[in-house]
Image 1: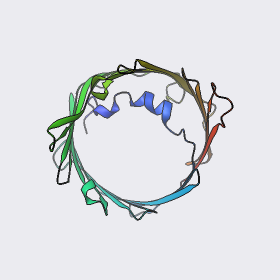
Image 2 (image 1 turned 180 degrees about the horizontal axis):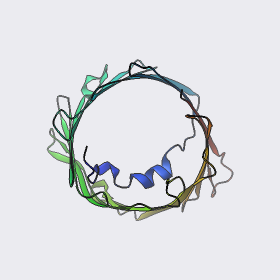
Image 3 (image 1 turned 90 degrees about the horizontal axis):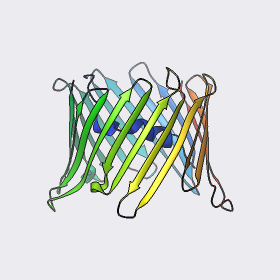
Image 4 (image 1 turned 30 degrees about the vertical axis):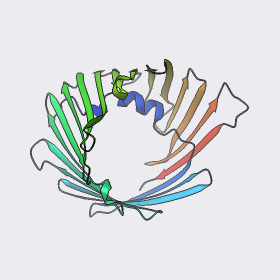
Length: 276
């Protein structure tokens, strides 16, 4: 693939990951195994409140094709085919879920040195079409996405954004919710490996005149341990500790407390991911 501006979904992703990724109030246990034949098997068990769920994901890679099959405890079977370079500079993704075959989806991504385009079509009796485009360079990119319902003839969504990315910082502005909200974010990295960073994000909802401002950060204590924290203007304080117990096997402990309602019980989550 080309070294172009990236997909539209990449705009604002760095800030979003720093503020949301790995934060959880569930108990999660994951075990992954790999074979020399290119097959990866991942088993996951999750306890959320009093409900326990699980799934098994099998991934097979062969040349430019990746096949993912996931079976969960509710007897759903999700299958995804990802094929690179059917046509030069493209990626094709086909997915469907049994027994709900109306959930099928076909997506094509095209990458160019100065632009990327995606089109996704729902494979149902009343297909919906999602599309996006991004132009620019790896340093500065402009993009937009939309969704169209062929049954009603209406746009279900339209979003626009801009991002500026440098080696030690990243900034983005996204106008979303059909123009009803705007989100601006900024990330500054403290080291060359980008393991320590500070992030700020502000979101405004025009219809309700509601503003949400969030600040956070990530700090690498050592090569095995990372701590993260975040706080918004509504008083929600979150913290996370992630430690590599053995190579590729990670323990994550996270929690959240409402500083404006300390009488409420804080939320805690634990995740263990074991890899060979």
